[in-house]
Amino acid sequence: MLSSFLSAGPLGSVLASIPSPSSGSIHLGPLELRAYGLMIGLGVVAAVWVGQRRWTARGGDPDDISALAMWAVPAGLVGSRIYHVATDWKRFTGRWGDVFFIWEGGLGIPGGLAAGVLVGVLVARQRGMSVSGMLDSLVPTLPIAQAIGRWGNWFNQEVFGGPTDLPWALRIDEAHRPARYLEATAFHPTFLYEGVWNLALAWFLIRVDRRGVLKPGYLIGLWVFGYGVGRLWMETIRVDAAFLLLGWRVNIWMSLVAIVVGGAVALAGRSGGLGADTGSDIY
Image (cartoon, rainbow, N blue to C red):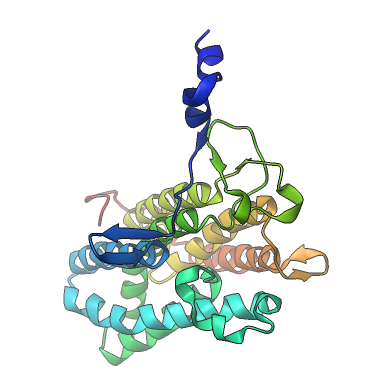
């Protein structure tokens, strides 16, 4: 009875799917903010805040994390854009100036994470920080930043999955649908799936770190493994155009590599026992 009522009329159409924003911008009076960039910025702020708390709990100076972020975040943005352009270069043919329009979307997370982590390690060494301690403090914050940043895809109506009639389907405007799906109106909300996955992964990484399952510095392997598993799932349902390598999306290959390499690192870092589970989930 209730399902019949909800499936009928305007109310049913609203409750049966997630609407997409009509604009990729957020207006605050005369100020216009690009939602994609805003979500990335909020993700960075959240990651820095949690990272400072975790680093401080290890006896570190919270200013170390702020200084590290000043270098690692720009490096991550540059790396992510380079990765996106390199794996989807055909989209920019004839309009290479668009390479710099990052507010329109198009950041390759693998490239950004690799560049950001590399620069973070270099800055940590320069400041005399414990690299393993820094990594274990900050690694769980990376999926938190990803989870928040992915909401930018919702505002831009991009990188969604295939058509679906599930209750949490995402409504996409015709202008943003792939040509082969112009008749479909609702799609898998991969931004939501990936956001939930990343938050769960962050929680799991914090729990593993607290229990001492891995040796110092090896938590990054578990994160790479978890990221690869989640991204592999997303790539199999996404319908946006992508560069293919041997018939598969290039990010599927990237995910498989991440699973193998990350899994190997995590296995190599097993401590052989479980430590005491103490402290706050934040720490």
